[in-house]
Image (cartoon, rainbow, N blue to C red):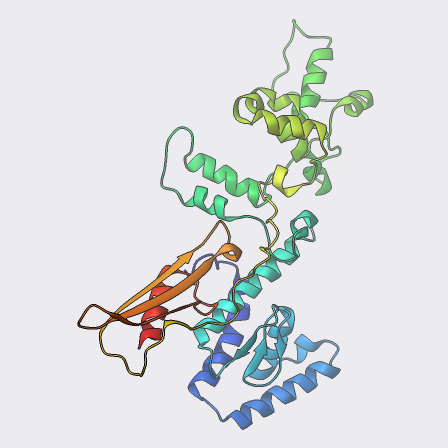
Length: 352
């Protein structure tokens, strides 16, 4: 799970310097005093430098500048504060946990850059991105039939990634002199051609439109192509939901990522957030420790359509030889556990 979805070199660019520093602290590659001196020198350089990245050399400066870019704070050689305000102790938190936090911060950093183009995605919190889970399911399915196959997957990838070059985008790149839909413009010209019925225009013939025809042709953007244009009306009637078509005609959907690229805005965060720390509660507290008996640990993790909705728990019970429950406890696993297997392992660990 950790290695999926990291083709962007931005992940390595952030995870390698922070991860190596975390590993150095965890395995005591150097004394804490020397590592503290390196970090202090790097922080001093950053504080007074203008072109700070040009002066970066060594692991300490790389750590500091990388943390600044993802809005982390370097408190000391062993203490980092994440963008969510969570304190990481590199002597206590394993490097694998730190890398998970860095990957999450990089995803947030990437989504914030995308929000410069699609500001609607930041409505319910900046950096959270779009609801991608349904798209990953569609792209990862092995189903291949007439309704969904590799051809459809390629189209979904193209649409979601913004690879559709409409005429308005072509003109913006300087590759065309107008931004009008070519299909609709061609239909106007064909309808008004004086040679209709006697001569048909071929693909080798140059199409020349008058200023009046250009003015009457609609702008060829994604909203026109998908929802409003007559050029794809038959396909829209066949494939699109009638309610969506009606909304697109009555509301302004131009430029909205949900309507043009399939990137729906994430819902607001739940009012009750995930626990930031692990918990331990006795349900049946034994009279003394250790307890002798058979241990029955269990863990569960219920996740929703997004990570923010995931909730985990663990419990164990100890049964003696007479079948009496002599001890039982329950609680919440640490926040870095995001799956059933982790909750199960944590339950076993707590029972020891």
